[in-house]
Image 1 (cartoon, protein in one colour):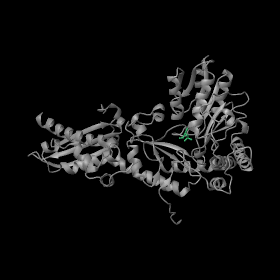
Image 2 (cartoon, chains in turn brown, yellow):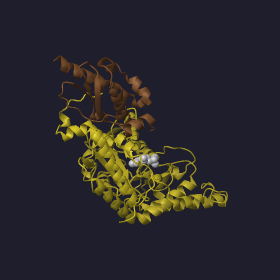
Image 3 (cartoon, helix red, strand yellow):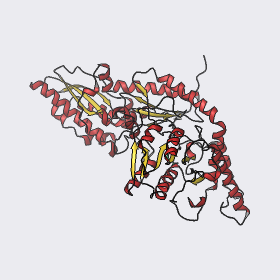
Image 4 (cartoon, chains in turn green, orange):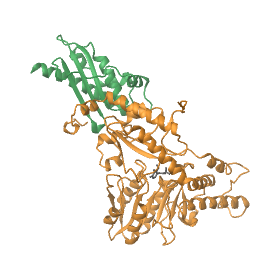
Length: 127
Length: 410
Ligand SMILES: Cc1ncc(COP(=O)(O)O)c(C=O)c1O
């Protein structure tokens, strides 16, 4: 299958690969997917006291499109506030990366990951 | 120090999928593809063009028969192993339906066998699908235990196309013959690579395909035993070619190519097997020290040039994407809409994750040591890179048991 240039670029030079301390109260972690389905994404955001995402890291087990979707997402969320980040739609990711129909689920997973990370951060803060 | 050997990429390591046509085979085929050459219809009895074509076809029949130590009259030409499987299974089922309607096969057969069996189920036949053992082998004992009074046919493959393991088809033949049940063997992957001997093995029907053994695509054969005689109901009706079992004008150039491929395979079989096994061992030796890397299928009972490997914590499709220098295939069908891991690996007891993380490497006649070395290096590099990206690898290194996590399956 042919991948778009953008997918290949993110796949070969993934941005913001890494891991943050899950226990840190400024960090929100979203882990979505399942090994059995062939993709797992872990997206982490570091949030400033005024609610801006200062940094983002990811690790992804999955196909090239899943890796690219999560890599792109980390670029997009940096500098946004939590509501803006949680409002990112999978269709925007799919469009940016020119994902074929069979790979749309990768962008859905990325959307789920940022929503889960934001929720995790807020839950931590609320408790 | 030796000068670095440069290899041309991409490197073809997908010989189980298909093989390039051997140049000697191309030469033989060319003789049938010109106006001066052997272009006649082998069924034309009234002139020399037909006689020459018939002679070429019968020569090819001898060559294919010789490869499996059979009588040439036991060879029926088909368009490939898919057709051979269909003809053998449906042909026997339809001919012997009054004797019984039960068929035994295994869960890891090629789709050409499985889907044919499914069709027969729709027609009212009953099929038992055996689970192979964890090494991917279906044993004579398993077959024996599945036989019933109304069993008419057993269909078990010789070599498996995904994991490369080779079944004891001689032993399975004994079990079937003792019980008076016919045995069909899909030998698309094994024929020409591993010795097969129809005089001594109690196999009644055997499917072969030229393009898996350096012959052209679109041609194959079904061996049909004469003593004791096996009867088939034809699936393709017409001019009564191939003793009524398969009508249609014979494709002289294809058959001549298949015959030449069979001759080359038979003559070089043991030397080639030895060379390919050495390449396989060389490849494995270069990657086996990596953590959490496993061979799928029996380590000994296998095709000399085939290896299926799971690389835990990395996903097969992304691995293939990293391995652009290599032409290989993945155990997961992530590109299909279903996202289903290989049914063969699942039947071996691999969990979905390990099935998704597997690659099939198959070496062949034109594979060199330098290519194998380069391939192993690429694989190491890619696996290391992807593990750095993998949250599962992180968790594994932190000592987290992935089975204890509740994943949200989607
Ligand atoms: C075990 C097995 N059976 C049958 C087939 C089908 O063979 P053909 O391509 O000649 O129809 C193949 C090849 O894909 C195979 O590997």
